[in-house]
Length: 168
Image (tube, rainbow, N blue to C red; front, top):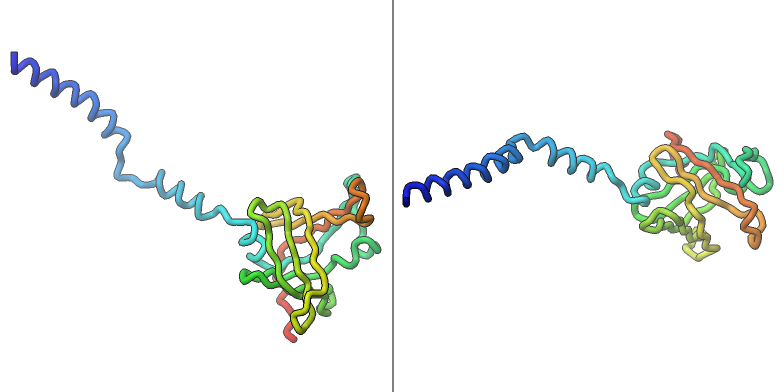
């Protein structure tokens, strides 16, 4: 009888151990895949500071392209350099300084806040911009030509560039 109980326990143990052993593996590819995917996920602020951006387009609320020379767009056109330390500089496409200061992006990636400062560090203005798209390939934010009319907007489109920031 004792032998039958021991055999039964051994059989039950084997039934549990075999499936568990099948799930176990010395191949850690599943774990490294998960780790790699997590490492590839970047915070919005990391994406924005990963490279310089150049204004390459503008689109209105109807989907129509708006020329970069349009009076409602031209002030947003140029090169932008968002540094990982939370500072930024912007230049015209002719490398003339436009503005500098501090920046942040909300954790959900939906809003960018800039604080423009003069050369002495005095705040000139602050601006919040709704982010429409932020990927490694595109940074687009929304502007409103008429501040109180949210039915009319222009999305300012930027793409990464290899253009180096001008030296002062």
